[in-house]
Image (tube, rainbow, N blue to C red):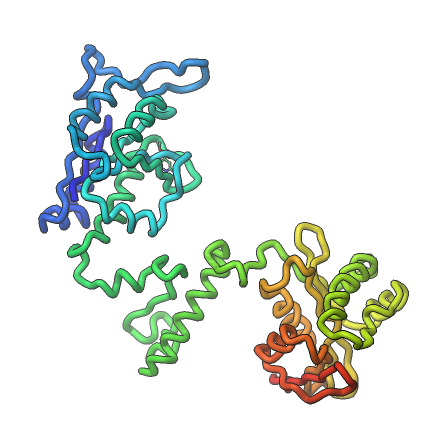
Length: 385
Ligand code: J9T
């Protein structure tokens, strides 16, 4: 792979001669050439910028030096053999997937801009002569594209076939499986009173793999929920104890949810559809009730009350447009956590024809206890403490 860098600060790219890129160069895998853009100016001051047409702050990089530099660097290279990378905060976000794509190219040319940007006509011409990728490292501004060119080069070069000795360490890394890395430990087993998690010393490879997966998922959920699949994405949903002021909204949500149930269980009498707002108000104050809100809107709810030794869970509801994202399961877990010490089982009723609900309860550890009245099944699960 050949990499050309066009910049007004060639010294900034010195690190390319060291570390990873340097090793790749020694192995003959990449050929890096750094060029000073000012070599293609012709005035005494070697000017590369000018004031913006239309006014405004800052300076814009003039098209002429860029035009000559690109002529020299691109030559008459066919369009499909070269990608020109322009680092800019208004570019496409740089990700591992973009790095993988760039690693397949024969030639990369980094065009590092300074000031407020490069005259747009340069970019338009580049797009005619090569594949143009405007790339951003993230949502922050740098003084120029040089640091971004270094970062992109380092991420790309280590993916060039033959560069990394150990292909496994590439696959196992952060971002390659869509999750963040799990925490890692080495000797000694105890350091300043802190122990390595015992599972890692157990020699049980399946248990170690499961622990690492769980840690990676937990970290990803905490730090980067945007990376998780949408089924587990409940960003911005808040759970809290219901208040009397929630009654009317809960009533409307309940009707919306149980009309669906009515269609899944034809002919079954559904209490939730036969109660008044006042009926709801009375259980709302008597039972333990949790509601879910998203952007101020009530999107879910669940109630429970103690009956003998059973924590009777009921009225688990999720707004139909948010179904399938795990909110029902989250509400169920929360109401289970509120179980009083006297209870020994969780118990609930659901429609015999509501297969989706039953599947969710089974996954949560509930077992079918049979049909109590026609069309209604009871499910229970022991309370574990
Ligand atoms: C001038 O370039 C930048 O400021 C830049 C480049 C790439 N990514 C960014 N986030 C900023």
